Image 1 (cartoon, one colour):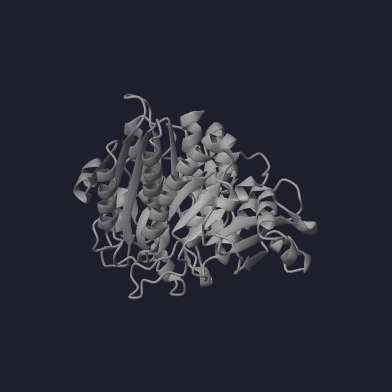
Image 2 (cartoon, rainbow, N blue to C red):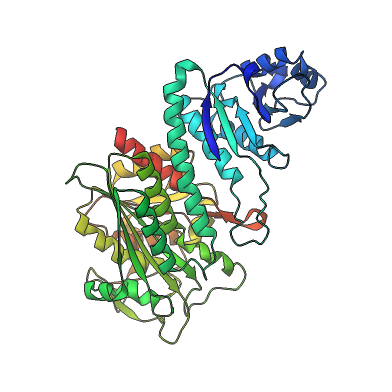
Length: 495
């Protein structure tokens, strides 16, 4: 979709649809008043006859506008006539774009940026409009014979006042970059495991590097990892016919010798559970076990497009976890790159085996901070549902910065404790630690396991098992936590 900022008066605009807001008690927004005056009170007539009460997310599409270059007007309820919360603003935007999917609408002008939103400026509002519209317009049609999409939207213009043009333009550039990063993340995640293999992920990283001069890519093969002693990582791929890859993206936008931000994303392109085989219902969704890796690619794309003045390393440990005669067995003991030994009690707790060696590998970059993201535990879904991602870490400043970024980005996080008492659950009679800690506090003990390989730097872990994809009728990737991580990087770049 094409996005643009528009400053021309409404009466001079020509489009398939104009989006304006209406508050409760029949109060019109400024743009609604303007279009009402130029259409002989048409909006007033619709509102006064009770077709729209003004509740948040209510919509009415007016299909016939006499003597006007605007072919349709979409009225969107904004609730009480006071500043909106950020979530209600996004709710109104989502209602608007969902109302425009079916009609033959190609060009839209959105006036909702004029709404007052608590603690938000035109930069934020513009970016949110683009993110919400782009997210709702996304459809996975790559593998369908009928390529027709539900939405026909091709262009979205955002009305902004001349005085706010600078902020709106910055928001436009950020929004476009984040939207592209989300699209890439969603596309890779939605691809099936027979197409999106570890090799395919590596190829996509190389394709990305061709577009941006500051972005380099290298890939470690299994033989390279064997030389480095990555026994935990390599144990996961033993049951698969697909070779494992450790993909490194190196974005150099900051000072030459500046310490980088390292992002690590679990890239398990399919997880059958190994010998500890998963149950059949829902196993198709285990193609989403690489959403952490897809997030790294999407976030690096957004950072490169915005040309952020930062050094960022993206690491994607990628493999499959399949049952086979050579696969990991419960009771096996592995030696990690750090030298710590691990007793495998459950082969379905494989993500942490990929990540622990990658966390050790990250030390060579002398990182400023390390943030890993992974669809790691079903326990996170039980604890937090599908609203926030889980956050754990060994550094309060880093965790607080991520929480602040999540608030701005509307990409929620909730911090869980990483207390010493939980480490007791990982004790093994036969190795330095076990790869699972029992049925209690599964998300926390998984992070405790990872923490033992992140002791030498500031580290945070995002468990995105409940937020990386939707299930049921709306099954599909969400693109989270690309907005959160991109906001964190923007804050770092301009902080």
